[in-house]
Image (cartoon, rainbow, N blue to C red; front, side, top):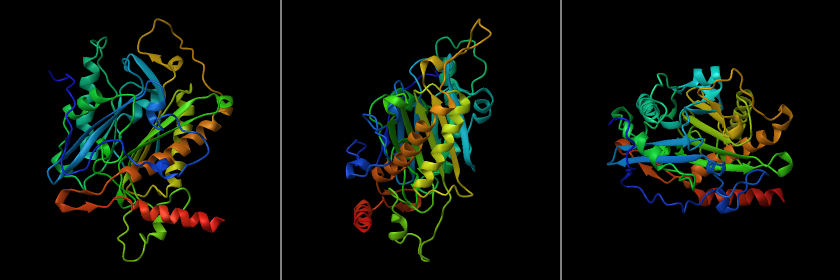
Length: 376
């Protein structure tokens, strides 16, 4: 049956392990920002949030996949969540934007994939939603699907993502450790000329600021002049000399989840701050870059029922004056999520024998140590 959710199958050939001995930024003693991360330092630190991947790395030419983020474990169409989407630079194919902008809510899981698989992922989300109990009479589904273009390492024209890959990602989703780097929608991505991928991070606000948790997940596939914790490592590595073919185009999908009670207006304000986090890594939102931020509140008291006999809907949300700590959390978590995607990603060879090297971490760490000595 079309809408049946399949058992997860991961095709992963010619790459190293997907295990979470991932050597993230903090494993090297690099602490981004001042706020504390959650226990997992991941978007899944936000209660109820789940993430799943389908990774397809097959033969010498296919390096692609799907990543799914679910705000809660219930029927999302029946219990919608406040949401907003901010467009940093719109060279992309984000599906579902206009209804989120108009109504301020999200009614499907968020899917990330490659550029030419957006239509397939939309079909899969529609099938998934229509098949859920209580949705027998649903006749309209606003599927939200984001993308970046993995066509340098992946045979993107072959369109190797099918609906089953989306169902598998949903079926595999869980609230635990989030795999990063060369997984899911990040399997074939490139960032700052190095291997990019999936990255995540979180922040927990102090009790006096509400104690809320905010998490970010990114699909990094963009260019610029890379910086790590304020150090211009890309420049020091000689990445931008005359001999280097500088290509800044690409994209970055950023997803923010928080249990802070926010309406769509303040979620859009929050989403804008993720672009500041991208900028702190050296991203420049170039002409050909699709830089989108999807921000969601998972707070139970803010959920919007699909059907109600009442003509009004009352919620309690944060005042504007309470937003500043969340703004800082979004900036820090986005910066760290992008860096995690780079630190965990591994050298990859793909379509037409093209190879993209992983970030040279030892050299980067040496540069960070030298910068520290200079500061003294």
